[in-house]
Amino acid sequence: MTTYKTTGLTGPAPTPTVSVRPVVLPAARRGEDLHVRVCAPVTGTNLPIVLFAHGFGSNLDGYAPLTDHWASHGFVVIQATHLDSKRLDIAADDPRKPHLWRYRVQDMKRVLDELDTLEASVPGLAGRVDHSRVVAAGHSFGGQTAGILVGLRVMDPETGTARDMSDPRVMASIQLATAGKGGDELTPFAHENLPWLRHQDFSHITAPGLVVAGDKDELPLSTRGPSWTTDPYTLSRGTKSLLTVYGGRHFLGGISGYEAAETTDENPGRVALVQRVTLAYLRHITGTDHADHSDWETAQAALAGDSHPLGRLESK
Image 1 (cartoon, rainbow, N blue to C red):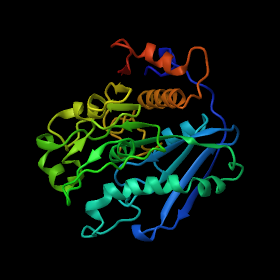
Image 2 (image 1 turned 60 degrees about the vertical axis):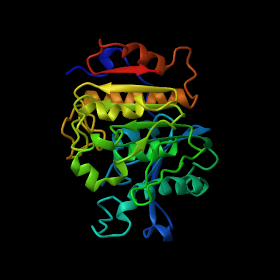
Image 3 (image 1 turned 120 degrees about the vertical axis):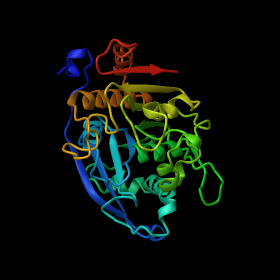
Image 4 (image 1 turned 60 degrees about the horizontal axis):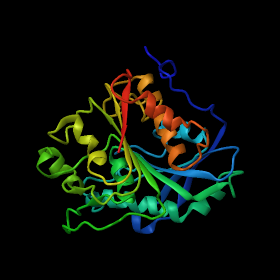
C-alpha cells in the first residue's frame, strides 16, 4: 500500500499528551449532565483549541485517530458526549428528539462558557491555553454542529424559522463527511427521520473552513451521491478548502476510532492523509505554523490537481 509518508507529505513529530474524562458539567435544562473529555500536550503555551463534535451515536471517546493526533501536535482538543449518543440511549418518544441538532450546538456553547473550568481540570494545563483561538470541527452530524457555530442556518422543523446560532468565539471550522443542502435532494428516509436536514443554508458562512469529503461516500440521505458532502465547500462564502479523499467512504478510512466496527473502507493511508491535512490546516488557520514553507503550503502543492494517489486539495 502507498503510505502517506512516501507521497512527499510529512509532518512534525508528536509530543506526549494528557487527557481527563469525564469532566462533568451540570446541565439541568438538557436533562443530562454534559460529559466532556479534554486532551492536551504536556508542554507548550498559548495552545489553540479544537472543539470537536462526534457523529450520530458516538461519544467523547470517539475519533481518537484525529483527536489524539491534533493534541499530540499542539492543540487542546475538547469533546463532549451529545444527547444522540448510544451511551445515553434516550427513548424514541423522548421530547428532546426533534431538537437533537439544537442541543448539540448548546453543548458546544456551554463548553466555550466553561473553558476555565475545563482547563483547570487537566493537571498542568492552567494558564497554557489560548481561549481566543478556537476551531470547531466535526464528523457527519458533528460537521453540521461545527458549521452552525460559524454561520450555517438550519430551519427548525417545528417553528419553520432559521436563526443565526453562530458563535463569535469560533474562528474557523473543519467539516468531515457532513450533510449538504436539503430540499428535494433528501431521500424520504432522511426527510422523515432527520428533519433538521430539510433546509440548510450555507450562504451565511463567512469564516474560513476546511471540508473533507470521500468520493465514495454513498449516504442513504441524499439522491445526489458523494458530491452532496461537498456542499459546505461549494455553497459557503468564506475562504475555504476542500480535501477529496479518493476511495473514501463515510468514515474516511477509519477516523472514528482505532478499531471502529462501523468503518467500511479501512485504510491507514486515508486516515493518515486526513490526519496530516487537517493538522496542517489547523496550524495554518491558528497561526501556529511559522515555518518559511508551511505544512499547509506543502499539502496544497502535493495534493494539487489529480496526481496524488490518495486525494486532491483545492481552495477558493
